[in-house]
Length: 160
Image (tube, rainbow, N blue to C red):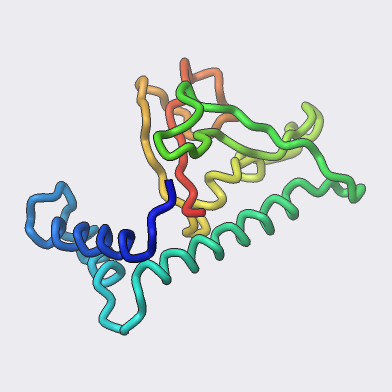
C-alpha cells in the first residue's frame, strides 16, 4: 500500500513527537541523531529528504553490484542469495544475504572482508541499518562462515 506524501509527513511528525515524549524506547543518543532529521530546522521536507536518500541508496547498491559482480575477465559472476527463515517482511521486502558467488578457488584467495555481503557493504557505506530478526547464540556475522549458524541470524533492511 502506497502512502501519500501528507500521510508520510504525518508519520514523521508522530514519530518525532513519540521520541520527544520520552515514551519511546529510543535512548538519548539515538534521539539526538533522529530528531533533527524528523523535524528539520533547515526548511527541507523530511519526507522528501528521506525519498531522495532512498534513491541515492538504490544508486549506491546498483553501483556496488556492478563493481563486485564483475570478474577480471569482464563477465559477470552470479549473485549468491540466502533468504532468511521468513523470506519477506510485512512490507514485502526480501530478507536475505546477497553477495557475489565465488568459486572455491576464488574464495581461497579472498579475505573475509573481500567476501562480504552487499548487505554489509551497504551498512558500512551508511546506506543500510542492521535489523536483528533472530539470534541463536550464533557468533558468525557473515554468511560465508555458515558452519557456526543453525539459522539465518541476521537480516538487513535496505533504505531503498
